[in-house]
Length: 148
Image (tube, rainbow, N blue to C red; front, top):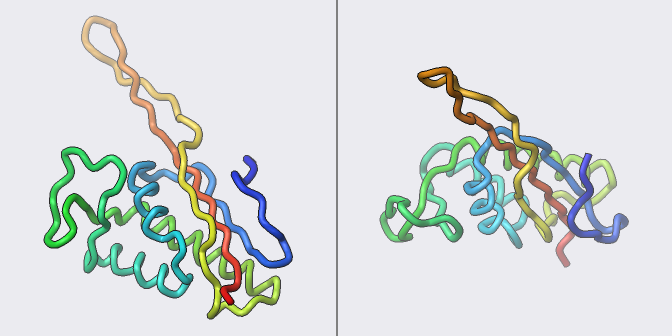
């Protein structure tokens, strides 16, 4: 299992890690950018609205050739990445509850999404040739702490 990209005081924080998730790395990066600094309750509502397609996620990274949404510019509804992110936020909350923190007052202080392992695959082609058909995975890490 990989290490977290940052170290925080374990007496004040709770962590959660999603390892080799089958979702888009680009969408996960945009979600992580949007969620950083939010309280966990706000973050869960935000992710649930994206899953239900009631709110668009503005694209900050990888926004070329992305359809424009009303009022926000380039954006999308990354439902699959939002479902995985919601699971990890809930997991971090459960870890905080286990440590004895006040769940109502937890805030996301660190969140990152980056490329995980590549699952190699091939697609047979004509004349005995083959083309790569690889699947990328995404690692997501979240660290939350009590807000003052």
